[in-house]
Picture (cartoon, rainbow, N blue to C red):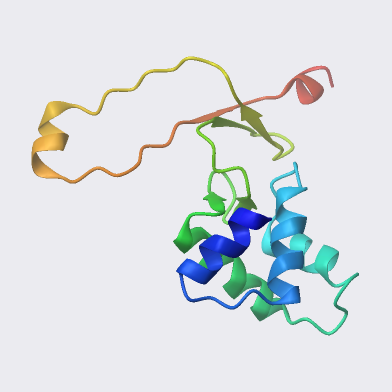
Length: 136
C-alpha cells in the first residue's frame, strides 16, 4: 500500500478511501474481475460509490501502471493488480483467467517491427480449455 500511495502522489492523484479500497480489492482478487464484479465488492464498504467512479479509477490505475487490463475472448475488460511479468491462459469454455508465472517464454520482437515502431510492451495470451472444463 505504501507504493500505491507514493505512485498516486507522484501522478497528482489524491489518495481517497474509495481509491484505496478499490486498489486493495483489486490486489486481493485472483479471479481477474471485471468492473461490475469489483464494483459489487467495493459497495460492501462504500454502498454509495458509483459504478462510474470504479470504472474511471480502474482506467486511471491502468494508465499509471498499477493495474492491468486483460482483454481476450469476451468484450468485457478484466482487471488485475499484479503488474509483475507473467502471462495469462483464458479458458474458451468457462472464461476463467489463470496467471502463468515462472515459465520461461522468450519472445523477440522482429527487427522489422523494432525499426519502424517504438515497442513498449508485448503481451502473450494463451487460449484453450482449462483442466476443470476438459474433465466435463
